[in-house]
Image (tube, rainbow over all chains, first blue to last red; front, side, top):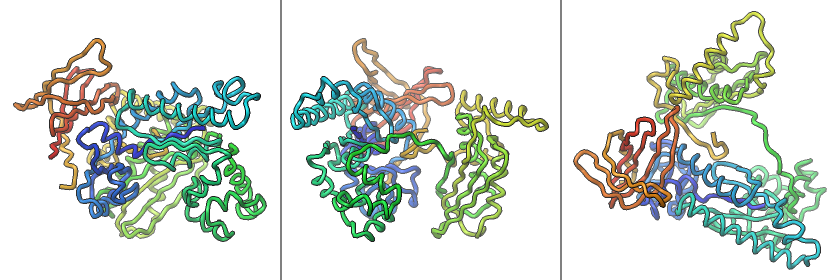
Length: 414
Length: 88
Protein backbone atom coordinates (compact mmCIF):
# COMPACT_ATOMS: atom_id res chain seq x y z
CA UNK A 1 0.00 0.00 0.00
CA UNK A 2 1.23 3.44 -0.84
CA UNK A 3 -0.39 6.45 0.82
CA UNK A 4 0.10 9.80 -0.90
CA UNK A 5 -0.65 12.91 1.14
CA UNK A 6 -0.45 16.30 -0.57
CA UNK A 7 1.43 18.72 1.68
CA UNK A 8 -0.42 21.84 2.82
CA UNK A 9 -2.76 21.12 -0.05
CA UNK A 10 -5.03 24.16 -0.25
CA UNK A 11 -2.18 26.57 0.51
CA UNK A 12 0.09 24.90 -2.08
CA UNK A 13 -2.69 25.20 -4.69
CA UNK A 14 -2.85 28.94 -4.00
CA UNK A 15 0.95 29.21 -4.23
CA UNK A 16 0.85 27.20 -7.44
CA UNK A 17 -1.66 29.59 -9.00
CA UNK A 18 0.00 32.77 -7.78
CA UNK A 19 3.81 32.60 -8.10
CA UNK A 20 4.08 35.76 -5.96
CA UNK A 21 2.76 33.84 -2.93
CA UNK A 22 5.51 31.22 -3.11
CA UNK A 23 7.93 31.01 -0.19
CA UNK A 24 5.61 33.28 1.82
CA UNK A 25 3.44 32.39 4.83
CA UNK A 26 -0.06 31.81 3.47
CA UNK A 27 -3.21 30.79 5.29
CA UNK A 28 -6.30 29.59 3.44
CA UNK A 29 -9.57 30.53 5.16
CA UNK A 30 -13.21 29.83 4.28
CA UNK A 31 -13.94 33.57 4.50
CA UNK A 32 -11.73 36.46 5.52
CA UNK A 33 -12.71 37.77 8.95
CA UNK A 34 -11.13 37.80 12.43
CA UNK A 35 -13.04 34.83 13.87
CA UNK A 36 -12.45 32.64 10.83
CA UNK A 37 -10.32 29.49 11.11
CA UNK A 38 -7.40 28.52 8.91
CA UNK A 39 -8.18 25.40 6.88
CA UNK A 40 -4.65 25.09 5.46
CA UNK A 41 -1.36 26.78 6.26
CA UNK A 42 1.58 26.86 3.88
CA UNK A 43 4.88 25.20 4.84
CA UNK A 44 6.30 28.69 5.55
CA UNK A 45 3.36 29.56 7.86
CA UNK A 46 3.75 26.26 9.72
CA UNK A 47 7.25 27.38 10.77
CA UNK A 48 5.53 30.07 12.87
CA UNK A 49 3.37 27.45 14.60
CA UNK A 50 0.30 28.16 12.48
CA UNK A 51 -1.66 25.07 11.59
CA UNK A 52 -5.10 23.91 10.46
CA UNK A 53 -7.61 25.14 13.01
CA UNK A 54 -5.65 28.25 14.10
CA UNK A 55 -7.89 31.31 14.33
CA UNK A 56 -7.16 34.27 12.05
CA UNK A 57 -6.58 36.61 14.99
CA UNK A 58 -4.12 34.14 16.62
CA UNK A 59 -2.31 33.61 13.31
CA UNK A 60 -1.84 37.36 12.98
CA UNK A 61 -0.17 37.44 16.40
CA UNK A 62 2.11 34.52 15.50
CA UNK A 63 3.05 35.91 12.08
CA UNK A 64 2.04 39.51 11.34
CA UNK A 65 3.04 39.14 7.68
CA UNK A 66 0.82 36.18 6.96
CA UNK A 67 -1.22 36.44 3.75
CA UNK A 68 -4.78 35.18 3.90
CA UNK A 69 -6.42 33.72 0.88
CA UNK A 70 -10.05 32.78 0.56
CA UNK A 71 -10.61 29.12 -0.34
CA UNK A 72 -11.48 28.31 -3.94
CA UNK A 73 -13.22 24.88 -3.93
CA UNK A 74 -13.45 24.62 -7.75
CA UNK A 75 -9.66 24.86 -8.04
CA UNK A 76 -9.04 22.21 -5.36
CA UNK A 77 -11.51 19.82 -6.96
CA UNK A 78 -9.82 20.34 -10.34
CA UNK A 79 -6.35 19.64 -8.91
CA UNK A 80 -7.71 16.61 -7.02
CA UNK A 81 -9.11 15.26 -10.31
CA UNK A 82 -5.78 15.88 -12.04
CA UNK A 83 -3.61 14.14 -9.44
CA UNK A 84 -6.03 11.20 -9.29
CA UNK A 85 -5.53 10.86 -13.06
CA UNK A 86 -1.75 10.90 -12.52
CA UNK A 87 -1.99 8.19 -9.83
CA UNK A 88 -4.26 6.06 -12.03
CA UNK A 89 -1.58 6.03 -14.72
CA UNK A 90 0.90 4.61 -12.19
CA UNK A 91 -1.34 2.18 -10.31
CA UNK A 92 -4.57 0.51 -11.52
CA UNK A 93 -6.11 0.41 -8.04
CA UNK A 94 -6.37 3.93 -6.60
CA UNK A 95 -8.73 5.03 -3.83
CA UNK A 96 -9.25 8.70 -3.07
CA UNK A 97 -9.35 8.98 0.71
CA UNK A 98 -10.06 12.70 0.83
CA UNK A 99 -9.52 15.86 -1.20
CA UNK A 100 -5.73 15.70 -0.58
CA UNK A 101 -5.05 12.01 0.04
CA UNK A 102 -5.08 8.84 -2.01
CA UNK A 103 -4.09 5.23 -1.52
CA UNK A 104 -2.40 3.28 -4.29
CA UNK A 105 -2.92 -0.42 -3.77
CA UNK A 106 -0.12 -2.46 -5.34
CA UNK A 107 -1.00 -5.68 -3.53
CA UNK A 108 -2.41 -7.29 -6.67
CA UNK A 109 0.01 -5.62 -9.05
CA UNK A 110 1.59 -8.04 -11.48
CA UNK A 111 4.94 -6.25 -11.08
CA UNK A 112 5.19 -7.48 -7.50
CA UNK A 113 3.51 -10.89 -7.63
CA UNK A 114 4.76 -14.22 -8.96
CA UNK A 115 7.46 -13.62 -11.52
CA UNK A 116 8.02 -10.15 -10.12
CA UNK A 117 9.82 -8.92 -7.02
CA UNK A 118 7.92 -11.23 -4.69
CA UNK A 119 8.42 -14.44 -6.69
CA UNK A 120 8.50 -17.61 -4.58
CA UNK A 121 12.06 -18.57 -5.45
CA UNK A 122 13.54 -15.15 -4.60
CA UNK A 123 15.17 -15.05 -1.15
CA UNK A 124 13.13 -12.95 1.34
CA UNK A 125 15.78 -10.31 1.98
CA UNK A 126 16.47 -9.87 -1.73
CA UNK A 127 12.79 -9.46 -2.61
CA UNK A 128 12.36 -7.01 0.30
CA UNK A 129 15.20 -4.81 -0.95
CA UNK A 130 13.91 -5.01 -4.54
CA UNK A 131 10.39 -4.13 -3.38
CA UNK A 132 11.64 -1.15 -1.38
CA UNK A 133 13.70 0.11 -4.32
CA UNK A 134 10.76 -0.28 -6.70
CA UNK A 135 8.43 1.58 -4.32
CA UNK A 136 10.96 4.39 -3.94
CA UNK A 137 11.25 4.56 -7.74
CA UNK A 138 7.45 4.72 -8.07
CA UNK A 139 7.33 7.51 -5.47
CA UNK A 140 9.80 9.48 -7.58
CA UNK A 141 7.70 8.80 -10.70
CA UNK A 142 4.66 10.18 -8.87
CA UNK A 143 6.50 13.34 -7.86
CA UNK A 144 7.79 13.86 -11.40
CA UNK A 145 4.34 13.31 -12.93
CA UNK A 146 2.81 15.75 -10.41
CA UNK A 147 5.42 18.36 -11.31
CA UNK A 148 4.95 17.91 -15.07
CA UNK A 149 1.20 17.34 -15.34
CA UNK A 150 -0.35 19.17 -12.40
CA UNK A 151 1.91 21.85 -10.95
CA UNK A 152 5.58 22.33 -10.13
CA UNK A 153 4.88 23.72 -6.64
CA UNK A 154 2.71 20.84 -5.42
CA UNK A 155 4.54 18.55 -3.02
CA UNK A 156 3.50 15.25 -1.50
CA UNK A 157 4.56 12.94 1.29
CA UNK A 158 4.50 9.24 0.55
CA UNK A 159 4.27 6.35 2.97
CA UNK A 160 4.50 2.65 2.13
CA UNK A 161 3.29 -0.13 4.37
CA UNK A 162 1.54 -3.48 4.25
CA UNK A 163 -1.86 -1.96 5.10
CA UNK A 164 -3.73 1.35 4.81
CA UNK A 165 -2.97 2.21 8.43
CA UNK A 166 0.82 1.79 8.25
CA UNK A 167 1.01 3.57 4.88
CA UNK A 168 -1.02 6.51 6.24
CA UNK A 169 1.06 6.86 9.41
CA UNK A 170 4.29 6.46 7.43
CA UNK A 171 3.28 9.29 5.09
CA UNK A 172 3.22 11.66 8.07
CA UNK A 173 6.77 10.84 9.16
CA UNK A 174 8.93 12.79 6.73
CA UNK A 175 6.91 15.91 5.96
CA UNK A 176 7.10 17.81 3.66
CA UNK A 177 7.91 15.97 0.45
CA UNK A 178 9.13 12.85 2.26
CA UNK A 179 9.13 9.11 1.72
CA UNK A 180 8.99 6.41 4.37
CA UNK A 181 8.86 2.65 3.94
CA UNK A 182 7.68 0.40 6.78
CA UNK A 183 8.06 -3.35 6.86
CA UNK A 184 8.85 -6.09 9.38
CA UNK A 185 12.49 -5.02 9.64
CA UNK A 186 11.87 -1.46 10.86
CA UNK A 187 8.41 -1.57 12.39
CA UNK A 188 9.67 -1.28 15.98
CA UNK A 189 11.99 1.63 15.12
CA UNK A 190 9.06 3.21 13.29
CA UNK A 191 6.73 3.00 16.30
CA UNK A 192 9.53 4.22 18.55
CA UNK A 193 9.67 7.48 16.55
CA UNK A 194 5.99 8.25 17.11
CA UNK A 195 3.63 9.44 19.83
CA UNK A 196 0.32 7.71 20.50
CA UNK A 197 -1.69 10.51 18.89
CA UNK A 198 0.38 10.19 15.71
CA UNK A 199 -1.43 6.91 15.09
CA UNK A 200 -4.43 7.40 12.85
CA UNK A 201 -7.50 6.68 14.99
CA UNK A 202 -5.95 7.54 18.35
CA UNK A 203 -7.09 10.89 19.71
CA UNK A 204 -7.21 12.18 23.30
CA UNK A 205 -9.96 9.80 24.52
CA UNK A 206 -8.35 6.64 23.14
CA UNK A 207 -4.99 7.83 24.44
CA UNK A 208 -6.46 8.19 27.95
CA UNK A 209 -7.89 4.65 27.73
CA UNK A 210 -4.51 3.30 26.65
CA UNK A 211 -2.73 5.24 29.41
CA UNK A 212 -5.11 3.63 31.92
CA UNK A 213 -3.78 0.23 30.79
CA UNK A 214 -0.18 1.41 31.19
CA UNK A 215 0.36 2.00 27.45
CA UNK A 216 2.13 5.29 26.83
CA UNK A 217 3.94 4.83 23.51
CA UNK A 218 3.06 3.28 20.12
CA UNK A 219 5.79 0.69 20.70
CA UNK A 220 4.15 -0.39 23.98
CA UNK A 221 0.81 -0.46 22.14
CA UNK A 222 2.35 -2.70 19.46
CA UNK A 223 3.79 -5.07 22.08
CA UNK A 224 0.57 -5.34 24.09
CA UNK A 225 -1.02 -8.76 23.87
CA UNK A 226 -4.37 -9.45 22.26
CA UNK A 227 -6.21 -10.23 25.51
CA UNK A 228 -5.38 -6.83 27.08
CA UNK A 229 -6.52 -4.99 23.95
CA UNK A 230 -9.73 -7.04 23.72
CA UNK A 231 -10.41 -6.36 27.40
CA UNK A 232 -10.13 -2.58 26.86
CA UNK A 233 -11.54 -2.17 23.34
CA UNK A 234 -13.61 -5.34 22.80
CA UNK A 235 -13.74 -6.21 19.07
CA UNK A 236 -11.86 -3.03 18.23
CA UNK A 237 -8.99 -4.42 20.32
CA UNK A 238 -8.65 -7.27 17.82
CA UNK A 239 -8.74 -4.76 14.97
CA UNK A 240 -5.99 -2.71 16.61
CA UNK A 241 -3.90 -5.82 17.25
CA UNK A 242 -4.06 -6.78 13.56
CA UNK A 243 -3.77 -3.23 12.24
CA UNK A 244 -0.60 -2.51 14.20
CA UNK A 245 0.98 -5.70 12.84
CA UNK A 246 0.29 -4.74 9.23
CA UNK A 247 -2.78 -6.87 8.49
CA UNK A 248 -5.34 -5.19 6.26
CA UNK A 249 -8.67 -4.63 7.97
CA UNK A 250 -9.58 -1.15 6.72
CA UNK A 251 -10.09 -2.14 3.09
CA UNK A 252 -13.79 -1.34 2.82
CA UNK A 253 -15.89 1.49 1.45
CA UNK A 254 -17.95 3.38 4.02
CA UNK A 255 -21.59 3.97 3.17
CA UNK A 256 -22.99 7.50 3.08
CA UNK A 257 -24.96 7.99 6.29
CA UNK A 258 -25.70 11.72 6.47
CA UNK A 259 -26.00 14.66 4.10
CA UNK A 260 -25.87 18.09 5.65
CA UNK A 261 -24.26 21.50 5.72
CA UNK A 262 -23.09 23.93 8.36
CA UNK A 263 -22.17 27.59 8.24
CA UNK A 264 -19.97 29.76 10.42
CA UNK A 265 -21.63 33.17 10.55
CA UNK A 266 -19.21 36.04 9.88
CA UNK A 267 -21.30 38.19 12.23
CA UNK A 268 -22.90 36.40 15.19
CA UNK A 269 -26.63 36.99 15.38
CA UNK A 270 -29.77 36.05 17.30
CA UNK A 271 -32.09 37.38 14.62
CA UNK A 272 -34.63 34.64 13.88
CA UNK A 273 -35.31 35.81 10.33
CA UNK A 274 -31.64 35.72 9.39
CA UNK A 275 -30.99 32.35 11.04
CA UNK A 276 -34.04 30.83 9.37
CA UNK A 277 -32.99 32.20 5.97
CA UNK A 278 -29.50 30.70 6.33
CA UNK A 279 -31.06 27.42 7.49
CA UNK A 280 -33.23 27.47 4.37
CA UNK A 281 -30.17 27.94 2.17
CA UNK A 282 -28.35 25.08 3.89
CA UNK A 283 -31.49 22.93 3.52
CA UNK A 284 -31.71 23.74 -0.19
CA UNK A 285 -28.05 22.73 -0.67
CA UNK A 286 -28.51 19.48 1.26
CA UNK A 287 -31.79 18.66 -0.53
CA UNK A 288 -30.36 19.22 -3.99
CA UNK A 289 -27.58 16.76 -3.05
CA UNK A 290 -30.18 14.29 -1.76
CA UNK A 291 -32.09 14.52 -5.04
CA UNK A 292 -28.86 14.24 -7.05
CA UNK A 293 -28.06 10.95 -5.29
CA UNK A 294 -31.71 9.83 -5.68
CA UNK A 295 -32.13 9.56 -1.92
CA UNK A 296 -34.85 10.47 0.54
CA UNK A 297 -34.37 11.00 4.25
CA UNK A 298 -36.57 10.66 7.31
CA UNK A 299 -34.32 11.88 10.12
CA UNK A 300 -33.44 15.55 10.45
CA UNK A 301 -31.09 17.38 12.83
CA UNK A 302 -30.47 20.99 13.70
CA UNK A 303 -27.25 22.08 15.36
CA UNK A 304 -26.32 25.44 16.88
CA UNK A 305 -23.05 26.59 18.41
CA UNK A 306 -23.57 29.79 20.37
CA UNK A 307 -21.08 32.64 20.60
CA UNK A 308 -20.25 31.70 24.23
CA UNK A 309 -19.10 28.23 23.17
CA UNK A 310 -22.19 26.32 24.36
CA UNK A 311 -24.08 24.24 21.85
CA UNK A 312 -27.53 22.81 21.23
CA UNK A 313 -28.68 20.12 18.86
CA UNK A 314 -31.85 18.21 18.33
CA UNK A 315 -32.98 15.63 15.83
CA UNK A 316 -36.16 13.75 15.09
CA UNK A 317 -37.31 10.92 12.93
CA UNK A 318 -40.56 10.83 11.01
CA UNK A 319 -42.45 8.05 9.22
CA UNK A 320 -42.30 9.35 5.64
CA UNK A 321 -39.16 9.74 3.60
CA UNK A 322 -38.73 13.26 2.18
CA UNK A 323 -36.52 15.01 -0.36
CA UNK A 324 -38.31 18.28 -1.04
CA UNK A 325 -36.76 21.45 0.38
CA UNK A 326 -40.04 22.89 1.67
CA UNK A 327 -41.04 19.78 3.64
CA UNK A 328 -37.61 19.16 5.12
CA UNK A 329 -37.29 22.85 6.00
CA UNK A 330 -40.63 22.67 7.84
CA UNK A 331 -39.34 19.72 9.89
CA UNK A 332 -36.12 21.57 10.69
CA UNK A 333 -37.94 24.71 11.75
CA UNK A 334 -40.03 22.62 14.15
CA UNK A 335 -36.74 21.61 15.76
CA UNK A 336 -35.35 25.15 15.66
CA UNK A 337 -38.40 26.49 17.52
CA UNK A 338 -37.64 24.14 20.41
CA UNK A 339 -34.12 25.48 20.88
CA UNK A 340 -32.70 26.56 24.21
CA UNK A 341 -31.52 30.11 24.77
CA UNK A 342 -33.26 31.93 21.86
CA UNK A 343 -31.59 35.16 22.93
CA UNK A 344 -28.03 33.91 22.67
CA UNK A 345 -26.10 34.86 19.56
CA UNK A 346 -25.42 32.05 17.08
CA UNK A 347 -21.89 31.42 15.79
CA UNK A 348 -22.33 28.21 13.77
CA UNK A 349 -25.50 26.58 12.57
CA UNK A 350 -25.84 23.28 10.83
CA UNK A 351 -28.50 20.97 9.50
CA UNK A 352 -28.27 17.35 8.49
CA UNK A 353 -30.42 14.59 7.07
CA UNK A 354 -30.03 10.86 7.65
CA UNK A 355 -31.84 7.48 7.53
CA UNK A 356 -31.90 7.31 3.76
CA UNK A 357 -33.97 5.26 1.36
CA UNK A 358 -33.39 4.99 -2.37
CA UNK A 359 -35.94 7.06 -4.22
CA UNK A 360 -36.66 4.21 -6.65
CA UNK A 361 -37.98 1.97 -3.87
CA UNK A 362 -40.27 4.48 -2.21
CA UNK A 363 -43.84 3.62 -1.31
CA UNK A 364 -46.21 5.46 -3.63
CA UNK A 365 -48.79 7.66 -1.94
CA UNK A 366 -52.32 7.16 -3.22
CA UNK A 367 -53.82 10.50 -2.21
CA UNK A 368 -51.16 13.19 -2.16
CA UNK A 369 -49.81 15.26 -5.03
CA UNK A 370 -46.35 13.73 -4.90
CA UNK A 371 -45.89 13.67 -8.65
CA UNK A 372 -46.53 17.39 -9.01
CA UNK A 373 -43.96 18.08 -6.32
CA UNK A 374 -41.45 15.68 -7.90
CA UNK A 375 -41.88 17.35 -11.27
CA UNK A 376 -41.43 20.77 -9.71
CA UNK A 377 -38.13 19.82 -8.03
CA UNK A 378 -36.95 18.00 -11.15
CA UNK A 379 -37.51 21.22 -13.15
CA UNK A 380 -35.87 23.33 -10.44
CA UNK A 381 -32.78 21.10 -10.31
CA UNK A 382 -32.49 21.08 -14.11
CA UNK A 383 -32.63 24.89 -14.27
CA UNK A 384 -30.01 25.21 -11.52
CA UNK A 385 -27.75 22.64 -13.19
CA UNK A 386 -28.00 24.48 -16.51
CA UNK A 387 -27.60 28.05 -15.31
CA UNK A 388 -25.69 27.60 -12.05
CA UNK A 389 -26.62 26.91 -8.42
CA UNK A 390 -29.30 29.14 -6.88
CA UNK A 391 -30.42 30.60 -10.23
CA UNK A 392 -33.91 29.65 -9.11
CA UNK A 393 -34.43 29.89 -5.36
CA UNK A 394 -36.99 30.77 -2.72
CA UNK A 395 -37.65 34.53 -2.59
CA UNK A 396 -36.62 34.60 1.09
CA UNK A 397 -33.07 33.87 -0.02
CA UNK A 398 -32.76 36.83 -2.37
CA UNK A 399 -31.04 39.04 0.20
CA UNK A 400 -28.94 36.12 1.50
CA UNK A 401 -27.63 35.05 -1.90
CA UNK A 402 -24.00 35.58 -0.90
CA UNK A 403 -24.19 33.80 2.48
CA UNK A 404 -23.14 30.16 2.91
CA UNK A 405 -21.24 29.93 -0.40
CA UNK A 406 -19.63 26.79 -1.83
CA UNK A 407 -17.31 25.22 0.74
CA UNK A 408 -15.07 22.22 0.68
CA UNK A 409 -14.27 19.80 3.46
CA UNK A 410 -11.22 17.55 3.62
CA UNK A 411 -13.17 14.32 3.52
CA UNK A 412 -15.72 15.21 0.92
CA UNK A 413 -15.05 16.10 -2.69
CA UNK A 414 -18.60 17.20 -3.53
CA UNK B 1 -0.59 44.97 5.65
CA UNK B 2 -1.29 41.43 6.83
CA UNK B 3 -4.59 40.87 5.10
CA UNK B 4 -4.66 39.75 1.52
CA UNK B 5 -6.62 42.41 -0.28
CA UNK B 6 -8.69 40.24 -2.53
CA UNK B 7 -9.68 43.00 -4.94
CA UNK B 8 -12.37 40.88 -6.54
CA UNK B 9 -13.65 42.51 -9.65
CA UNK B 10 -15.39 41.50 -12.81
CA UNK B 11 -14.13 43.66 -15.59
CA UNK B 12 -13.88 43.18 -19.32
CA UNK B 13 -10.28 43.20 -20.60
CA UNK B 14 -8.30 42.87 -23.82
CA UNK B 15 -6.05 39.82 -23.97
CA UNK B 16 -3.44 38.69 -26.47
CA UNK B 17 -3.06 34.91 -26.35
CA UNK B 18 -0.68 32.73 -28.31
CA UNK B 19 -1.81 29.22 -29.22
CA UNK B 20 1.27 27.27 -30.20
CA UNK B 21 1.03 24.06 -32.15
CA UNK B 22 3.47 22.13 -29.99
CA UNK B 23 2.96 23.81 -26.64
CA UNK B 24 0.88 22.02 -24.03
CA UNK B 25 -0.41 25.17 -22.42
CA UNK B 26 -1.91 28.35 -23.80
CA UNK B 27 0.49 31.25 -23.53
CA UNK B 28 -1.05 34.55 -22.44
CA UNK B 29 1.13 37.28 -23.84
CA UNK B 30 -0.43 40.58 -22.86
CA UNK B 31 -3.40 41.90 -20.89
CA UNK B 32 -4.85 45.37 -21.28
CA UNK B 33 -7.07 46.62 -18.49
CA UNK B 34 -8.37 50.14 -19.08
CA UNK B 35 -5.28 52.06 -20.15
CA UNK B 36 -2.79 49.82 -18.32
CA UNK B 37 -0.97 47.09 -20.18
CA UNK B 38 0.53 44.07 -18.47
CA UNK B 39 3.15 41.91 -20.17
CA UNK B 40 2.74 38.42 -18.74
CA UNK B 41 5.89 36.81 -17.32
CA UNK B 42 4.54 33.56 -15.98
CA UNK B 43 1.45 31.40 -15.96
CA UNK B 44 0.98 30.06 -12.42
CA UNK B 45 -1.89 27.68 -13.01
CA UNK B 46 -4.95 27.28 -15.13
CA UNK B 47 -8.07 25.27 -14.44
CA UNK B 48 -11.62 25.16 -15.61
CA UNK B 49 -14.93 25.28 -13.82
CA UNK B 50 -18.54 25.09 -14.86
CA UNK B 51 -21.21 27.48 -13.76
CA UNK B 52 -24.38 25.87 -14.97
CA UNK B 53 -23.70 24.79 -18.55
CA UNK B 54 -21.02 27.40 -19.20
CA UNK B 55 -17.39 26.40 -18.86
CA UNK B 56 -14.88 29.00 -17.72
CA UNK B 57 -11.10 28.67 -18.02
CA UNK B 58 -9.37 30.45 -15.15
CA UNK B 59 -5.77 31.62 -15.51
CA UNK B 60 -3.54 32.85 -12.66
CA UNK B 61 -0.74 34.93 -14.24
CA UNK B 62 2.14 37.05 -13.02
CA UNK B 63 3.29 40.32 -14.51
CA UNK B 64 6.23 41.73 -12.57
CA UNK B 65 4.94 42.25 -9.03
CA UNK B 66 1.32 42.01 -10.08
CA UNK B 67 -0.88 38.96 -9.95
CA UNK B 68 -3.89 38.78 -12.25
CA UNK B 69 -6.65 36.22 -12.31
CA UNK B 70 -8.38 35.98 -15.66
CA UNK B 71 -11.44 34.10 -16.74
CA UNK B 72 -12.32 33.00 -20.27
CA UNK B 73 -15.99 32.31 -20.94
CA UNK B 74 -16.12 29.52 -23.54
CA UNK B 75 -19.70 30.29 -24.48
CA UNK B 76 -19.44 34.06 -24.94
CA UNK B 77 -15.75 33.81 -25.97
CA UNK B 78 -14.98 36.76 -23.72
CA UNK B 79 -12.29 37.54 -21.16
CA UNK B 80 -12.78 39.01 -17.71
CA UNK B 81 -10.42 40.15 -14.99
CA UNK B 82 -11.46 38.53 -11.70
CA UNK B 83 -8.70 39.57 -9.35
CA UNK B 84 -5.69 41.86 -9.31
CA UNK B 85 -3.10 42.14 -6.55
CA UNK B 86 0.11 44.08 -6.21
CA UNK B 87 2.96 42.64 -4.14
CA UNK B 88 5.91 44.60 -2.87
